[in-house]
Image (cartoon, rainbow, N blue to C red; front, side, top):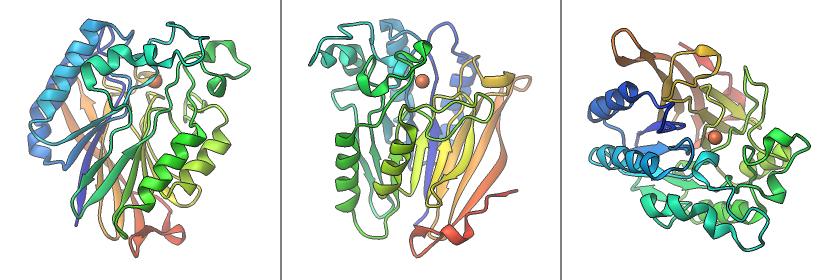
Length: 287
Ligand SMILES: [Fe+2]
């Protein structure tokens, strides 16, 4: 079975959202016939009620076409609330939960197609996310051991041969332009992601789209942004991920501002064999 996923992130409702792009995506989604739409976090700019309300409206509109898997990004977390109070973490997610429901790490199984799990990497001001750079506070994320073990167990219990897709917010590979990693202790996080059994990772945060491989085993789709904050002034972009028995394809749909539409652009293909991403054939082929 072939699984088709629309992968978006960093919509940043608020001053920086590009509502033309949002409406264009809402309008074209039924024609793309996705099996699911994944929102890899940062639906708001400042975790404000109005921003969450438009984000929820977006999620409800696209849910008429396909099931939605959404997780919070660092902008969706009220990190300034009780940052140093142990066990005060619930306050961080209060608004997100009000609009997107209690589950911060939803799972979706597409029958016979794929299991989509998610991991929480947006923890606000947390020891695990701290780095030696002050401006990283509440921006970087981390992948806690408990999250890794939960996802690993979930994938372990899924039917054999079914693609395992992991959704998280922070970029797991270094940004091409920013040269930044999204996660603190990123080597450990990368090892955990590979060990989790994920075949495809859907992440974001860097505001630059990407299609690459982690550890010779995991295909990584990094979504760009649908806001005006695209890195390097590049056109905004969302990703269309196709998982077939023998390949994973990531197609970038780039924004054409003058025509007011997204257009399918380049595709990067990765080989799979026997239901697994094949290390021997992982050279991306850009067509
Ligand atoms: Fe982010």
